[in-house]
Image (tube, rainbow, N blue to C red; front, side, top):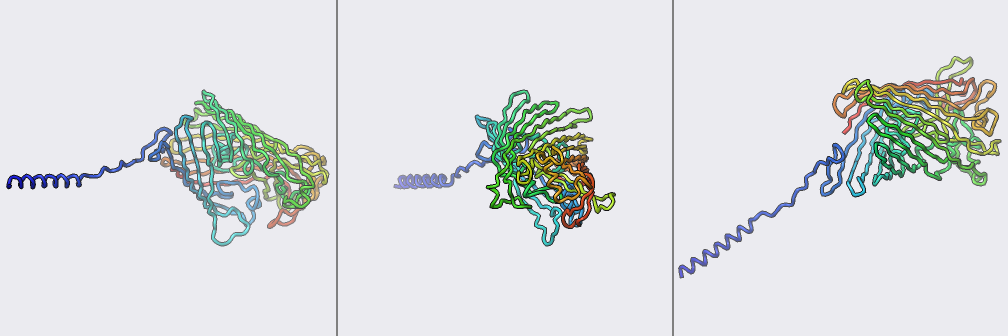
Length: 508
């Protein structure tokens, strides 16, 4: 009995012990998915956990102040700044943080890429005529937002017409004229083919609604105001811009040839005077027939200069008919010019320089014209020499020259110049007697910028920009350019402005 009892107790103890050990076994933990570096697409990418998609988060923070100009070295070439009145800010500042998200996934069709940039700005008011209260200068907006797949690009991206440097061959200013600029992106669809040996071709369709158009002037019922411009009488979009380029990328640099076709359309012959808004008579009055204009651009970058490592020259030249935005271009809208300064003309109050930027003008038959669109011509050239003094200091010398032309003769209402000058004479007495009329103009720009980069991805810069308006009017006229300027005699004269940009930027 004792032996049997001992065996039973021993067995029970063994089973009890075994059960206790089984209950104490640790549960297997789920594997932790650590973030892995992705080396396929350059520095900064990492794999999204659990996927084969690589992502890069980046951006920059920029603080800038412009003296005697608009934000980011926008020249005083119109508005209160162009008038130099008491509402013009002597300096203005902008603070911006940009955030970017770049994703890439390898597929059997090639890399699928998405990219987006969102900007957070706080701007000083831009030469507001009257301002009081808290400065609500905050804004949020999107720059490039696109998908790339199998050679196609869909979304808001640089036009297929653009050069890699857009309007920035060496400058910081967003207002270097002379060529195309869609650096913040335009809605488009495009396809790029690689032909080998650095040769590629791209064709695309761009939305022209915001950035690819300037103005169409109805010189009849709407007319021209006292500073030489007219309310915009463009019709709404009927067709996309057709754009493309052929490009060669080599160790020595780059060559690119671009072309664009753009439809120009006017709204109606009869519009509400002074506003270009439609009236009950607009539709039955008819409208000008639409016309196609276009532009071409040739661009060249030369690297490996004997002046030093990293130095280069960038230059592009453009010619446009009916698509003036591809010459008189900024990162936003195209300016028209109304600049004031002193005068030596007897009896004149001040001098004024005028430049009306348009894609076309028309004078309806009811006002003595032929009712047809007269496409505006323009050409420009811009470029920069970029030099590195050492790893910390660099300087760029940059400039541009642009020309806008209205063909024809004064008195011939079937021409652009004749129709414009007839409408201009309505608010500017003395044409042919005290002054001669010619709406064509040129704009020259010259600038220099020096940058200091004390540590990687942190830079400080100072940029000086000079602008000269070579306008073709001459003589004097009595007119009122608008408050706070008085109605007085003004001399038509070329104008100049000088601005300075101070900029600090941190990339991350």
